[in-house]
Length: 163
Image 1: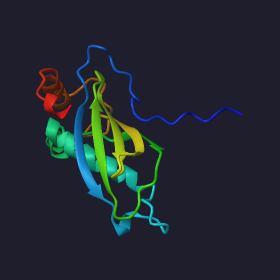
Image 2: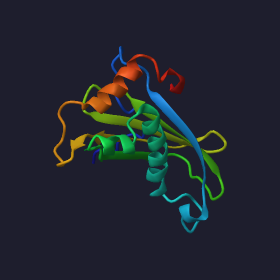
Image 3: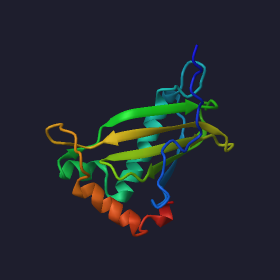
């Protein structure tokens, strides 16, 4: 019987040595009653929503938010979502979510996430991969100007304060 893959605590994507560091967005969230299961523990399905909230902030800060994609008639659907769970979060607890966009030369967006408990303990880590498509739903093989503009700003150091 094959062994299950080991859970990771981040560092999901290989990074080229000359690539700029990741761009990071951070936010806090207090777990509400509607977020928890009958045991008052954050329901596992809510982690994807936490990831999405931080991802939205990250995209807006980098000029690749939903409004930007809509204006350019592009979309960036998630084609992979991965989560590793480490410690439960309970009702009323405030968590710290970090979204880190990791450099890629491809027509995709790689984002790693961490969720830390109030105590600083890592609760979960994971990642998403978003592929870019045009208005007909056809995948883009080359990065569109919107993503290239983000990369130029990233390489220039404009996002250094977010690293």
